[in-house]
Length: 496
Ligand code: UN1
Image 1 (tube, rainbow, N blue to C red):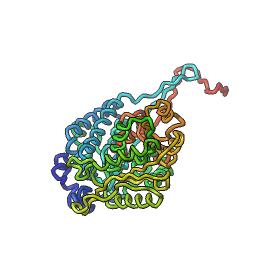
Image 2: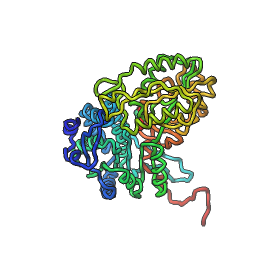
Image 3: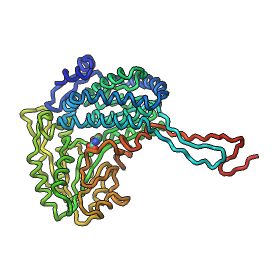
Image 4: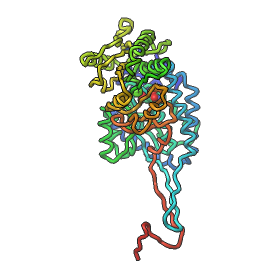
């Protein structure tokens, strides 16, 4: 299913045949390749190589480093269709979303190229005569990237393009569920390196390994920054381990994203936004819409319209023009069914959620997206289930809606549909949504790369991608220069 694609992308067949780790496609559950898992013991050697690469790369002027990323963006443009298809085959995304993910890589390349000429520091007024103060931004060293199956290529690119432009080297541990997309990215990056000519070897490497390999990366003191995307459970392990050795981390963990749907909302817009945000990627985005907090006066109409839209959604092979592809695996299907059972126990009324196409695909897990009307924000609603389940909660007054939005442990994305300016502004104010992303009249998912991406509370607090997220990949140095013939002390201290 992927051999021809991988060959065109430049991945040698030896990398995905005769290995010890089978790779399944969620499309029909079949084994499409087998990769070689590297032992945790191999990680140290890769980090040492990356360290050497960093020591050379940090001396290359940043705009020249940007040239490598410009070339990488060029290579990605040439291979967009093939890489997008590997994403579809390996992660089960529909064609449009597979391509969209590669587009996100291209966009962050463009962003990073511009950034390579804008790694600005401040000039600061010194309190001492004949003194000059400024801050410089320097690269950190080896950046470890741990990524999840659901954005198998874009999240790596967000991290790697910024890290490299900033002068770092990268070691990447992708999800065990999506090693082929990682091998493809590595091969494409190597094409860019060849065009660039004289970059140091081992500037960006991939580790195809299991949990132990990830842990070796997390624990290595030569890795000053670990950027990890995944579940809150994973973050609870990674965060403290990195902190224990005084490393830094960027954590992108679970979300439990809500839409407040106010009585003044444009319902056509809102229903379309619900559909894309809740059903897109089969509910497997960290920004997926998981809760609709809808005003009681429009609740029945909204639920009826969403149900009717859900009924028309085409489910099936993601490469064949359907809107919903498969869940990643059986465990994910089981977790969804468990959550629905729990929701029923907690008083929910479930619509949809059943397995689909089981006869045609006995080893793959397609589901009808589920809508669950809940009597309140019970335990199951507060928990992130990585599947297309949309909980519906009714509200009467706006303050209650805001409280419900914020009363979950996660804090990634949120939105409000309203035409009432006061509500919109209140939602985005300091006393409004407590999430890293708060949108008005746009769904919770599908964020652009230009903004900083990430969230609060159990989402981990990290920021990636746009705005000034690059600063997380650098160390700030404060520089004071005395160009006078005196030695005045700060704070007016006399020490003669
Ligand atoms: C993720 O699900 O890990 O906002 C990232 C979005 C995407 C990124 C999602 N741009 O849906």
